Amino acid sequence: MSKMKLRVLILDDETDFADELKEFLQVRDFEVYTANTPGEGFESLRRRPYDLMILDIRLPGMSGLEILKQVRKLYPSMEVIIISGHGDMDTVIQAMRDGAIDYLRKPFRHIDIQLSIERTEKYLHLYRQFREIQDQHSLISTELERLIDRNFIGESRSIRQVLELANTAAKYANTNVLITGESGTGKEIVARIIHFASEQHNHPFCAVNSSAVTDSLLESEFFGHVKGSFTGAVNDKKGYFEIANGGTLFLDEIADMPFPLQAKLLRAIEEKKIKRVGGTDEITVDFRIIAATNHHVETLIESRQFRLDLFHRLNTLTINIPPLRERPEDIEPLLKYFVNYFSVRLNKSMPKINAQLVESLKDYDFPGNVRELRNMVERAMIFCNTQTLSTIDFKLGDKKGGKTSINVALNLEEQEQNLILQALNECGYNQVMAAKMLGISRDSLIRRMKKFNIKIMKESD
Image 1: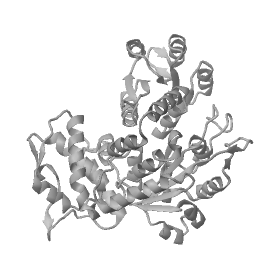
Image 2: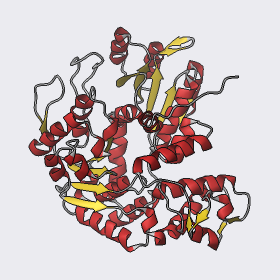
Image 3: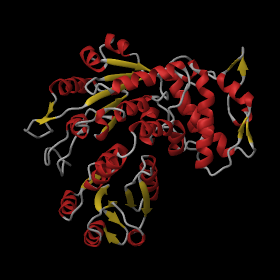
């Protein structure tokens, strides 16, 4: 079954910005095209139908407002999101009057444009159509496809236990779940398995990176706001609680959630009622919380960085995903899957796998877990020019005492910092490529670089 994709046109004269936004949306399964001038934009519109246009307000040779008026007349079924690096509120108001569905001011986070798209009627219409088609197929077969596509593969007893717990959690829609495990083990994948195997599978799965929500925006992001409640609130906006209504709110990196928000989250979970910022009406919401963390929450509770009462609300059922180094029997099936996956994606013939490579990988500690193995295979497949993959194609370091030495301390933050530095170095300090190699967004990479005070020093000519 092929999935229907929302077709998006980005019209912006900043090519780097347009390309980066295109990459972000493509990873999230949108079909995306870019244009850098009004002429290119109209030519692209003539070539193919679009569901959505992301339009910069200031373009060379023609005003974004004029383009908006024309496309609303010529393509009335296409929705338009306006973006601008300038704070001219009169222009923004005029754009909304002329038919724009939303407005975002540069610079904005990638999650903002994703949520803006997901609020559009066109997206919701396609989403409902897709769910109706899925209902005609077996839930089990659909979830097996999703499981494989999300790279959650394993034969070990511990992984089978994880899946059994996930299936158990799926049967109880009101049970909150806490998923623990190191970075790269697949916590969001397990959360999605729970959601899509549950009765809530026809409702939204809203994933939020808790550490990415700043104190100044946390109320608006989670509770939403009403038009005019603060500068820049040009329209009513739903928050995460409303978006996830009836479905699942997945809170990744829950231990990094700002302390003030923890109390508000607890109240929303208990009361099932919220108020938008600037609003007076109470809105009833109902959602399941699935939280994930790579920290020891009990330690944070002792240091008063995390609320004990919230912890008890979240961990009705706890699922721990063991690191890859503790389940070496999963390495070979994962390796075979990734080799096959990248053979298709890179349009290369599928190479054989040297038996010694499998044994060497089993001796490796994998501080980055399954995500690191995936990135290893992708890099090896790009540069491999032979019919067989061997240890030469994988950078595993020297062996000491029968184990592969990776010179990584047991401290989790040091491991994370070393992985970031390694990825940046291998990509020539290209942040977009390094983020892709690490399996995270560029915004997330930048936050982690700030956290570890990693700065990119440009060489002078």
